[in-house]
Amino acid sequence: MRAIPAVHWSRTLLLAAVSSAALAACSPTEPRDFLDARLSAVEDSVRPGAVSVALVEVTHHGSDPIEIEVEVCPPRIFVFDRRGNRLAQPHVACQLSLSAPATLDPGETQEWAQGWLAPGPPGLYRIQAWVAPVGGGLPVLTNRVAVTVRQPSVELASP
Image (cartoon, rainbow, N blue to C red; front, side):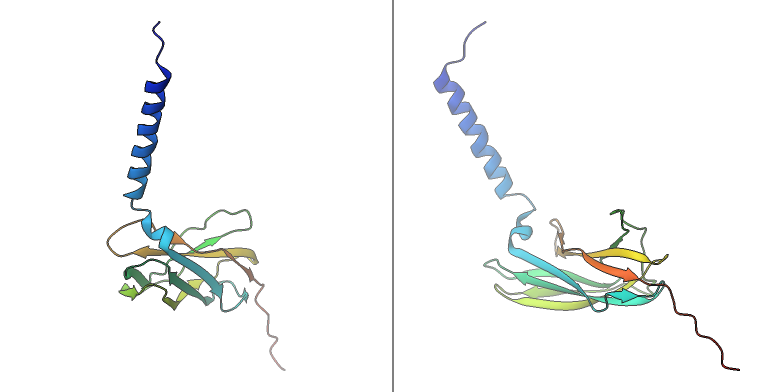
């Protein structure tokens, strides 16, 4: 067996590392480095089957304007149960798809509302939204927000 010279081996590792870094720099994950997406629930307690609203806030930290796909219907909201399992979609029945790109300038923050359908049975759930740059690239996920789905109140009829 022939020994590989240390200098040649080091040069090969350096070349592989530089090649990997160059590929990573050209990857479609770039928008993740420049976008910060946050989610907040308008109500932290809802009834099963109720349509609730969450606010998605996106801040652009890059140096060039970027377009974001803002799709109101169907919403880009995931709902997770207590164990972290994502529930089946869709969460809101849409009559038609409504979407429009939003342009964010460097340093700009925009916010928009997303409707979502509260699941049943009652319990603790978490919601999470995602934002996608126009023209491709990987979506950016928001934080997960806890929401309690409570038992519907029963109203007694007056005699």
